[in-house]
Image (cartoon, rainbow, N blue to C red; front, top):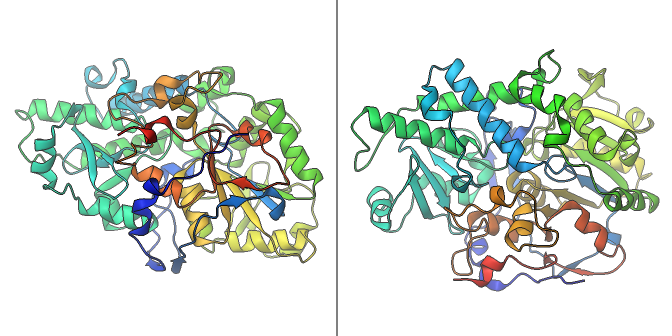
Amino acid sequence: MRVLLRSSSILFSSLRHSFPVTLRVSAPPLHSFHNSSLNQAMELNGSVEGTSRPIPANFNFADYNCVGFDLDNTILRYQLTNMVQLEYDALCKFLVDQKGYNADVLVKPIDFGFLQKGLTLDFEKGNTLRISGDGTIWRAAHGTKFLSDEEIEAQYGVERIWEPATAFYKEPLATWNGPVALKLRSLLDYFDMPAALAFARLVDDYDKKHGGPAKVPKVPGSIWSDVLDGLGYMFNRHNFAAKDGGHYFGNLRSYPEKYLNRCPPEAIEWLKTLRKQNKKLFLLTGSHIDFANYTSTYCMGPEWRELFDIVISFAKKPGFFTSNRPFLSLKNFNEGEPITNLTSLADQNLVSVSQGNWQELMEFLQIKLKGETPKCLYVGDNVVQDLYAPFHYTRCDTLAVIEELWGENKLEPLHPDSKVLLADKWGSYFGTKDVPSLWHNFIAKSALLTVPKFESFAELPLDKPIPTGFYPEEPVSLAEN
């Protein structure tokens, strides 16, 4: 077993922001997206305080009596090339058919080199940004044209500081909605990643119609608003149950073998081993229950429910970790009344609920543990929703599944979708030794261990200390300048 310890050079920016912080954010109306990464109008109810916690040198699975898992891009790995193409096609179809944009601008071969998980959009300037670990702008493109250092500094100053990006770097949950969310959008995962290319191509078209970009350009807010509407339409959770399912859900439901991967047997056995050790397992996903059931059945098999003590769907992370929304009952994949009796719920076998909050999940697990205090570990891929929020806003430790580690380090067998993971126009997702990325900074101060794929956990001991950092090795880019 080879585990790379985190180096001090990649933790430099984690020391620049101190906790606790208090968030007081009003809750606007929620959209019914199937995965909450696409819903940045989530709820952060009342006063929320995050607490800085150091990353220990080691961790041990034996120290935890409860282990939770995200579903999409964690247990379930998608066939990313096909999935991203489907998402881009579905988004462009909406923008052309419903918003009236020119098909010649959007409906053309996808440029995978322009796409990368974690890019940030500056709506007003029409720019796509790569943010470094200290919150400054590392690289930028206006539309699809990459900007020189001089052009970046002309727009953002010599220090490359943009206040919305600085606010996000300091506290991502504080900027999840409100004024900053009207200026900035970080594309956190593979579901909304294609929006960067659609947005950029529409900016190119706007510039062309208006004589080219100005020295300090400004584009109408309707461009991003229309793209966001497209994401909302495409991922609306009610579409999966519809007869045709829409372009996105319809294709995914008709051709699952094209878009989904089955979970390897060794990973399923690892989950069963955790259960045999009397750990309480929970699945916590942003997907609605019908979609989660469909993908889980394909991924883990028809008896997948027996792997988890409780399944929480449509969880609306990261708000799940900070809000007080009640659990809702489920019947035939439909949400019902709020659940008020957790003891009665815990008496049931293989519980499935919708929405809810972390505090009540802990109460549920404590009942299942016959009064023992839950000691939780949560495994996920989304840096803000699955790692940062639970680690800093609860007492839950986290583990990360980051496929870019697989692709970048060319681990055997080679990742079949490397072209989606290795954006040659933006550089490594993790950044470099001298300039680590914003996302690496968040991972370094929120996750005990980062692995390239879910089945990697099956290679690790369950009863011995494991060094924190990366497994089986750190990203090669962090050894480069």
